[in-house]
Amino acid sequence: MPRFRISLPSAMLVLGIESSCDECSAAVVADGREILAQVIASQDDLHAPHRGVVPELASRRHTELIVPVVTACLARAGTSMDDIEGVAATARPGLSGSLLVGLSYAKGLALARGLPFLGVDHIRAHLYAPHLHFRDDPKPEPEPTYPYLGLLASGGHTVIARVDSFDSVQVLGTTVDDACGEAFDKVAKHLGLGYPGGAALDALAETGDPWAFDFPDPVLGAGHRPFDLSYSGLKTAVANQREKFRRPDAEDSPANVAASFRRVAISMLVSRVRGALNEQGLHTLAVGGGVAANRLLRRELSAATQAGSLRAHVPPFSLCTDNGAMIAGLANGYLDRGDRSPWSLDVSSRVPVFRAVGG
Ligand code: KG4
Ligand code: ZN
Image (cartoon, rainbow, N blue to C red; front, side, top):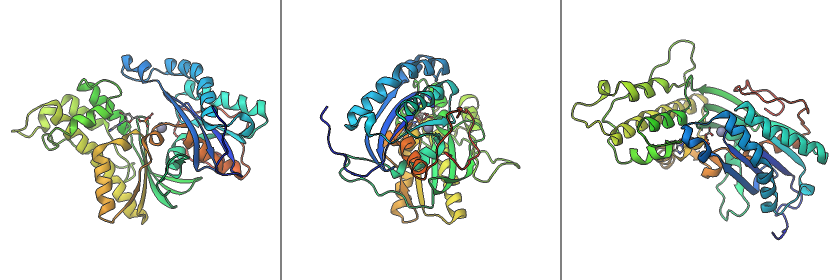
């Protein structure tokens, strides 16, 4: 591959590694903004027969993939490790075995090359993703200006947060049980749509009647924040109590179930987001996670944008799902001001209480 000049001559180049679940990804990012290259190796084929991610298999596959993924990424970027000025990896939250592969590899690489190393928080990284663009994108979307509301809706997380800067994130609401994407996947499994079935369910929902079933949006009781949400009741209603919620003249067809489930699942997100925007006096929203691909969600966001009530930033799909670029991009801010993670940094499967260094 020919080497070429990096477009930002004095840019800091950070290598970011993401291995928190079932995507093994690496990216080289300049100045926390411009992606020189990104490689994402999906493991969907490995986990599909089990209809869910098998942690032991995921970590073993990361072990096989990590070197080829990083090597290919550096080559695609036209860089070598000699050009890299910092190495970052996801430290939390995620599957411990998967996280350990990326984090340990990143530490080893940084140690061997005498480079600064940073372990970062995966949720903060998702919320940072709208600041990134690909070097070869002729017309990158403008990045959001702080402060903004972040919505992360993925297979593993559902988080609504106020974002004041790359290192200042205040969580306003989360799911209290299943993640939004997880609920899509479980309902898809129930309808026999394969794994992960969120996209297939979304496509099927386009053909159904969203009002065929009046599924519930549960009101969460005391002890919960106003922007928390819950998917387990909706999932159970779809799986076990459909008849109770069916409009008498509506057919109990997979398309009608999919459309009705999707209407409620997405309206839960949209109603919490609207409430949080109002409460915080914000007009900008940045969306991340695989559910950002959802057609109904996108239609609702673009309608709100056109009505002038909202400015929604939805990055390209490869930056919405798990990716190395968001790790490198977020790490840039910390590394640039001299923050370093200790070599003893451990992984954590838990969603963090946000702290100062490295998230
Ligand atoms: O961000 P991501 O990679 O999740 C995690 O790794 O945690 O996104 C994958 C999730 C899956 O749950 C998938 O079913 C869901 O995003 N997803 C969708 C759509 N496309 C992907 N959910 C709803 N509608 C879609 N179009
Ligand atoms: Zn994620």
